[in-house]
Image 1 (spheres, helix red, strand yellow):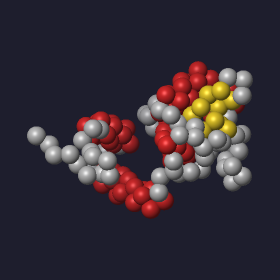
Image 2 (cartoon, one colour; image 1 turned 90 degrees about the horizontal axis):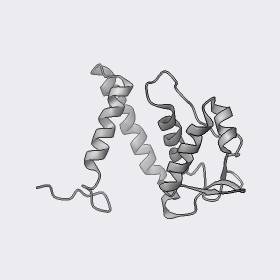
Image 3 (cartoon, helix red, strand yellow; image 1 turned 45 degrees about the vertical axis):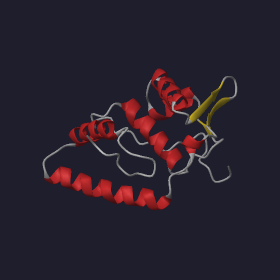
Length: 148
């Protein structure tokens, strides 16, 4: 746990004017820190109050985020001890090569969306819809199931 992020300086960047709800921004950035391996299994995360103060958001919002991430198996909330990154399969970092590919594709997607006149919120909703549509249609390993 030596090169992990300090529990006091979680690098979360909020864009309050983006139109994307703050709790989604924070939740997804914490999820990404875990999948990038910057937050490792067993690492502590800031207390609800500390993260709320750091980000200038309501403590109830942070508590909601932590509960959702706990339900997904990413965080382990231990009463009286703190909140930690879970040690389960869900917290295994993504392969760096895969993250690099995704970053490149996302950049290209953003450029195409901008060239087409779409804003970030429109693109977000489009991605969210397709994420839901694709859910359940892929076999393990990434190959698509046959469609009717």
